[in-house]
Length: 566
Image (cartoon, rainbow, N blue to C red):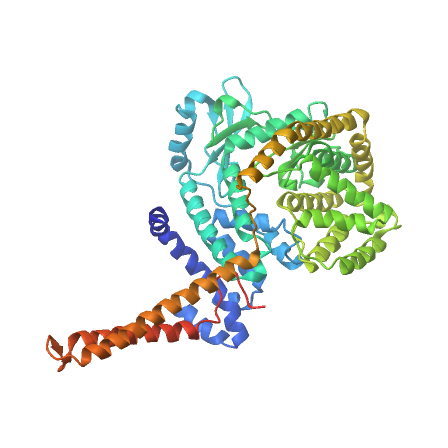
């Protein structure tokens, strides 16, 4: 408790800054709905707020996006994560979140140099033969400079901004407090598990701030593509990598967004689209480790229709079970197995309460809409959009790893169509799905899975005599206990506690009234206003107890946090 109080005081300045931004953007919607936009504009001018008239006209999604931009790197990253939650937000919100740009003015080299040399453990000119002081690119967490090693190799140096960690940690503490409040006070938002989302976001952001972790991700990706000469992953220079800095190979090529330059250089856009798609689908379906943000800024085209992936700060991971579920869902759609598709969605949503009959009807309509259409008429954006809209209808929340996957597929589809207007992600994905199915039932894989299952069964059988002996011993000694967890027991205990408190105060109040009445009849002793002092104090105490009882009874309909009357 003491540490929480100290951290709250420590974060107060940051909280004040965030509150000013939220007030500026949050009040606009309420005031506009109340018809008080003119009053808001006048108040804004008095407080020297900028562009208040414009803010009043913004939609809710636009105001949230602009507020996140002003609130800094933590909230920009949060918005970018929310942009992956196509299962939670409608399309106009997702579009606004996608507009969140992580580009900021670069920090002056003289401000960055102390941190750079501290991370390197030596002066810059002793590590690099040449170092460009002008930043090649800058983001809210780190900025990139080009350099040359003494061996002659061209590299880029990614350096974390000084003191960014303190700001981010303060923001994460505030987000966690906010999530706790939302989870306890707003029942309709509880199913989205805001505290769990904040914890996952915090872990993701801390990993992204650890530049050494990004280097590990790149090296793992390079190992996965070691046999594919068409895909290039930059080499990492581990002697210069740490939590605050990483040094990696400089990739010479054409940025993917410069499609005309690529064509002028003789590159084939159809081949590039196919190879990029094949690479990402391999990451997802085969490796279970994928680039979670495969947009144009993170891809470089190279001679020979090769391409390089860069920036592995945000990656997604899919377990073997999750990959199997994806294949099962695709197979269910192909075979028109509505119940099989519903089972996969319910596995993803875990404890959601769903009207199964209604879900099956809507899933049947969803599958029928796309079943039998030619591949060229199937668009992944439409399919995922309809599927996530269906999940929102039934309050089915995607696990975070699948949210990243859906977002990566949508980004890939959009980028592929820009590179090649005839690009068809469904057609490109079909051979990869078939290969995944074949690998799933390959004899050695089946044998391995069977051996793992047999091993689990053997462990259970081996432990059975010992467990039975413990059970019988507990029965004989009378120490066998059952732990029952019922949702209503907490509410029932709360009722009993309040009833006991009221009864106790009522008895004490009654005793004070009776005792004070007796004292009033006894002469002698100290007096107050001509009356026996003890009697007066007794009646005063009884009065306080009576008032407390009245207030408690009046508030008796209010339930504790997280409970509602049925």
